[in-house]
Amino acid sequence: MTKKILLILGGLILFFIYLSTSAGRTPYDYYLRLADALLHGRYWLTSPPSWLSELVPSGSRFYTVFPPMPAILALPFVLLFGQGFQQQWLAHILGVGVALFTALSAYRLSKNSLIALWVFLFASLGTINWYLSATGSVWYLGQITAEFFISAAIFESLTKKRVWLVGILIGAAYWSRLQTILSLPFFIILLRDQLFPWLKSSKSISKLFSRASISGVFLGSNKLYQLLAGVGAFIILNGLYNFIRYQSFFDIGYLKIPGLLQEPWYSKGLFNLAYVPEHLKVLFSAMPKLSLEFPFIQPSWGGLAIWITTPGFIYLLRSNLREIAVKASFLAILLIGLVDFSHGGTGWTQFGYRYAVDFYPFLMFLTIKGVGKKLAWHHWLLLFLGIIVNLWGVLWINKFGWVGW
Image 1 (cartoon, one colour):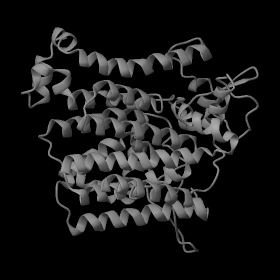
Image 2 (cartoon, helix red, strand yellow):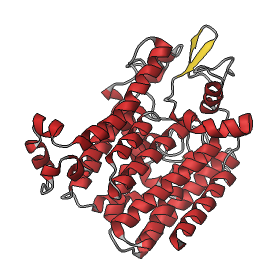
Image 3 (cartoon, helix red, strand yellow):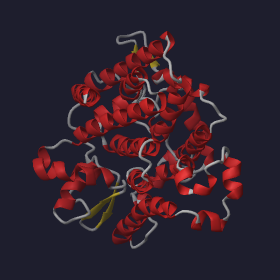
């Protein structure tokens, strides 16, 4: 009971930290407007303001190109509070959820309450989750929502292992941020004992796949069907959502945004491997703006290297590559990252490199593994540095407007 009270108290404190460091009502409230439309029997917007440019016009209808899960989560709040509800408040709530699920996973792996506290602070205030959760604009909310569901799926996979629920959580993440469905192999590997009972003695990925013949995989366990059914339900829903808007099950509408491919950052199309180096440059080498005038150092909308925003991620390099779950985590990062890195445009405007949030749950998992079961002074030092950097970014951008290109 004491631990539950502490979790609730920690969550409430974190919510108010996000609330107090927010810039206020976000103008990029696509999800709030879509939730209101859904409550009025529409799946499109009418007469949107000019600054909502990522819409597909069709006569008097305007379709949002973003997966609708955050709008669905906003439905009860909009029903209760109407347009008085502010979209970034949902981001605050989900950001708290991300921190709690990540900390609970850390406790499950380490059995150490102090490590769980370190991870809670790390996930909530020591990463760009702080800025995304405090700001809550459409792009950030979509990513925080997906991170929330994937973090919940990891916790479920470590505890009760209800594969049907894991499937639903992965599906919900997919309907928040489509590329997160590429995390499915991670969960299949993590839940292999439940999905493939005949592989319980397996200790390696190579053995898993060498013995998993077609008949073994698809006839070996009906729990695999439960996992795939949970994910598949959302794939079908997304296909139907596309069809009623564009008469195609596979067209999400992004290329229908007027003038999209005329933008210089899409010179090679929406996705192209030629874009990868620019993403890696932002991820690993983007620096803040320096000036001889006050305030002397500012965040850049173009991004900031991950080792600056979150130095604590260095501990993931200490995770044991001999563990199958560690290998599976790196696989998930690679698969999701390849999609993100191939996209035209590197995620601006942003603090840090926001596309990394798509695979943050796996970076967190590896960091927990790397930290191990005992904390030292350097863990607290890197946590403190990360919190200071992210506090700087949130205050400079959201409160003072000290940010530029």
